[in-house]
Image (cartoon, rainbow, N blue to C red; front, side, top):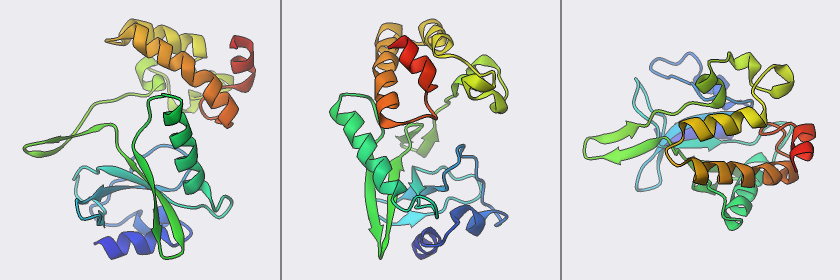
Amino acid sequence: EPETVTRMARRSSVLGEVVGQRGVRLSLAGAQDKLPVKLDDDGALWLPLYGAPSTHILKVPSRDFKHLPANEVLVTQLARKLSLTVVDIELLRVEDVELAVARRYDREGTDAGIARLHQEDLCQALGLMPHAKYEQEGGPSFARAMEVVRAESIEPLTDTAQLLRWLPFALLAGNADAIDVDTAVAIL
Protein backbone atom coordinates (compact mmCIF):
# COMPACT_ATOMS: atom_id res chain seq x y z
CA GLU A 1 0.00 0.00 0.00
CA PRO A 2 1.17 3.61 -0.55
CA GLU A 3 1.73 4.31 3.13
CA THR A 4 4.09 1.34 3.33
CA VAL A 5 6.23 2.56 0.42
CA THR A 6 6.53 6.08 1.81
CA ARG A 7 7.21 4.73 5.30
CA MET A 8 10.00 2.55 3.92
CA ALA A 9 11.46 5.49 2.03
CA ARG A 10 11.93 7.41 5.29
CA ARG A 11 14.09 4.67 6.76
CA SER A 12 17.79 4.22 6.24
CA SER A 13 17.59 1.15 3.98
CA VAL A 14 14.73 0.68 1.57
CA LEU A 15 16.10 -2.64 0.41
CA GLY A 16 16.24 -3.95 3.95
CA GLU A 17 12.53 -3.29 4.29
CA VAL A 18 11.49 -5.46 1.35
CA VAL A 19 14.15 -8.14 0.90
CA GLY A 20 12.63 -11.49 1.71
CA GLN A 21 9.03 -10.29 1.67
CA ARG A 22 6.71 -12.73 -0.07
CA GLY A 23 6.05 -11.75 -3.67
CA VAL A 24 8.75 -9.04 -3.87
CA ARG A 25 11.32 -9.29 -6.65
CA LEU A 26 14.23 -6.83 -6.75
CA SER A 27 16.43 -6.76 -9.82
CA LEU A 28 17.65 -3.17 -10.11
CA ALA A 29 21.39 -2.84 -10.53
CA GLY A 30 23.58 -0.21 -8.92
CA ALA A 31 24.83 0.78 -5.51
CA GLN A 32 22.11 3.30 -4.69
CA ASP A 33 19.07 2.21 -2.66
CA LYS A 34 16.08 2.13 -4.96
CA LEU A 35 12.75 0.42 -5.28
CA PRO A 36 10.69 -0.50 -8.31
CA VAL A 37 7.27 1.04 -7.75
CA LYS A 38 4.02 1.54 -9.60
CA LEU A 39 2.83 5.13 -9.70
CA ASP A 40 -0.94 5.40 -10.10
CA ASP A 41 -2.70 8.25 -11.88
CA ASP A 42 -3.64 9.68 -8.49
CA GLY A 43 0.02 9.80 -7.40
CA ALA A 44 -0.07 6.79 -5.07
CA LEU A 45 3.06 4.64 -4.94
CA TRP A 46 2.65 0.87 -4.87
CA LEU A 47 5.18 -1.92 -4.45
CA PRO A 48 4.53 -4.36 -7.32
CA LEU A 49 4.11 -7.91 -6.07
CA TYR A 50 4.18 -11.36 -7.67
CA GLY A 51 5.80 -10.30 -10.93
CA ALA A 52 3.63 -7.24 -11.57
CA PRO A 53 5.57 -4.68 -13.62
CA SER A 54 6.72 -1.42 -12.07
CA THR A 55 6.33 1.92 -13.84
CA HIS A 56 8.88 4.00 -11.93
CA ILE A 57 12.03 3.72 -9.85
CA LEU A 58 12.01 5.37 -6.44
CA LYS A 59 15.43 6.59 -5.26
CA VAL A 60 15.95 7.55 -1.65
CA PRO A 61 18.56 9.47 0.35
CA SER A 62 21.50 7.50 1.67
CA ARG A 63 23.16 7.90 5.03
CA ASP A 64 26.30 9.19 3.31
CA PHE A 65 24.62 11.40 0.69
CA LYS A 66 21.43 12.89 2.09
CA HIS A 67 20.67 14.98 -1.00
CA LEU A 68 21.28 12.21 -3.53
CA PRO A 69 17.70 12.25 -4.91
CA ALA A 70 17.75 16.05 -5.40
CA ASN A 71 21.16 15.83 -7.06
CA GLU A 72 19.95 13.12 -9.43
CA VAL A 73 16.95 15.21 -10.45
CA LEU A 74 19.12 18.30 -10.92
CA VAL A 75 21.71 16.52 -13.09
CA THR A 76 19.00 14.83 -15.17
CA GLN A 77 17.24 18.15 -15.76
CA LEU A 78 20.56 19.73 -16.74
CA ALA A 79 21.14 16.93 -19.26
CA ARG A 80 17.64 17.53 -20.66
CA LYS A 81 18.41 21.27 -21.06
CA LEU A 82 21.45 20.23 -23.10
CA SER A 83 19.17 18.15 -25.36
CA LEU A 84 20.44 14.82 -24.10
CA THR A 85 17.95 11.98 -23.98
CA VAL A 86 16.87 11.39 -20.37
CA VAL A 87 14.02 9.80 -18.45
CA ASP A 88 11.22 11.79 -16.87
CA ILE A 89 12.15 12.37 -13.25
CA GLU A 90 10.76 14.47 -10.45
CA LEU A 91 11.51 15.24 -6.85
CA LEU A 92 8.80 14.07 -4.50
CA ARG A 93 8.66 15.26 -0.91
CA VAL A 94 7.15 12.92 1.67
CA GLU A 95 7.07 14.76 4.98
CA ASP A 96 10.74 15.63 5.57
CA VAL A 97 12.22 13.24 2.98
CA GLU A 98 13.01 14.02 -0.65
CA LEU A 99 12.68 11.15 -3.12
CA ALA A 100 13.51 10.95 -6.80
CA VAL A 101 10.82 9.25 -8.87
CA ALA A 102 12.03 8.27 -12.35
CA ARG A 103 9.74 6.89 -15.04
CA ARG A 104 11.05 3.58 -16.36
CA TYR A 105 12.15 3.84 -19.99
CA ASP A 106 11.72 0.09 -20.41
CA ARG A 107 7.94 0.08 -19.87
CA GLU A 108 5.07 0.72 -22.23
CA GLY A 109 1.38 1.15 -21.56
CA THR A 110 -0.85 -1.16 -23.59
CA ASP A 111 -4.57 -1.96 -23.63
CA ALA A 112 -3.72 -5.04 -21.54
CA GLY A 113 -1.72 -3.04 -18.96
CA ILE A 114 1.99 -2.37 -18.56
CA ALA A 115 4.40 -4.23 -20.86
CA ARG A 116 8.08 -4.73 -20.15
CA LEU A 117 10.39 -3.76 -23.03
CA HIS A 118 13.53 -5.83 -23.50
CA GLN A 119 16.75 -3.96 -22.81
CA GLU A 120 20.36 -4.93 -22.24
CA ASP A 121 23.28 -3.13 -20.75
CA LEU A 122 26.62 -3.14 -22.55
CA CYS A 123 28.00 -6.09 -20.59
CA GLN A 124 24.96 -8.19 -21.48
CA ALA A 125 25.20 -7.18 -25.14
CA LEU A 126 28.84 -8.28 -25.21
CA GLY A 127 28.33 -11.43 -23.14
CA LEU A 128 30.46 -10.12 -20.27
CA MET A 129 29.94 -10.97 -16.63
CA PRO A 130 28.69 -8.16 -14.33
CA HIS A 131 32.02 -8.00 -12.49
CA ALA A 132 33.55 -6.76 -15.77
CA LYS A 133 31.31 -3.68 -15.83
CA TYR A 134 34.11 -1.12 -15.71
CA GLU A 135 36.91 -0.70 -18.22
CA GLN A 136 39.61 -0.86 -15.53
CA GLU A 137 38.15 -4.24 -14.46
CA GLY A 138 38.28 -5.71 -17.97
CA GLY A 139 34.98 -4.27 -19.08
CA PRO A 140 34.18 -2.60 -22.38
CA SER A 141 35.94 0.56 -23.46
CA PHE A 142 34.19 3.60 -24.87
CA ALA A 143 35.46 2.59 -28.32
CA ARG A 144 33.87 -0.84 -27.87
CA ALA A 145 30.60 0.79 -26.81
CA MET A 146 30.66 2.85 -30.00
CA GLU A 147 31.26 -0.32 -32.05
CA VAL A 148 28.28 -2.05 -30.47
CA VAL A 149 26.00 0.94 -31.04
CA ARG A 150 27.12 1.21 -34.68
CA ALA A 151 26.58 -2.50 -35.29
CA GLU A 152 23.34 -3.08 -33.36
CA SER A 153 21.39 0.17 -33.39
CA ILE A 154 18.42 0.71 -35.67
CA GLU A 155 19.58 4.35 -35.94
CA PRO A 156 23.38 4.14 -35.62
CA LEU A 157 24.12 7.73 -36.71
CA THR A 158 21.67 9.21 -34.22
CA ASP A 159 22.70 6.88 -31.40
CA THR A 160 26.47 7.25 -31.84
CA ALA A 161 26.05 11.05 -31.93
CA GLN A 162 24.03 10.84 -28.70
CA LEU A 163 26.70 8.64 -27.09
CA LEU A 164 29.41 11.11 -28.11
CA ARG A 165 27.38 13.97 -26.60
CA TRP A 166 27.02 12.06 -23.33
CA LEU A 167 30.77 11.64 -22.92
CA PRO A 168 31.69 15.22 -21.93
CA PHE A 169 28.50 15.57 -19.90
CA ALA A 170 29.29 12.45 -17.85
CA LEU A 171 32.82 13.72 -17.29
CA LEU A 172 31.74 17.22 -16.21
CA ALA A 173 28.91 15.87 -14.05
CA GLY A 174 31.36 13.61 -12.23
CA ASN A 175 29.61 10.42 -13.30
CA ALA A 176 32.51 8.02 -12.84
CA ASP A 177 30.04 5.15 -13.18
CA ALA A 178 29.48 6.08 -16.83
CA ILE A 179 33.01 6.66 -18.06
CA ASP A 180 36.60 6.22 -17.00
CA VAL A 181 38.02 9.74 -16.51
CA ASP A 182 41.36 8.99 -18.22
CA THR A 183 39.53 7.51 -21.21
CA ALA A 184 37.17 10.50 -21.43
CA VAL A 185 40.04 12.99 -21.30
CA ALA A 186 41.98 11.05 -23.97
CA ILE A 187 38.94 10.97 -26.29
CA LEU A 188 38.06 14.60 -25.78
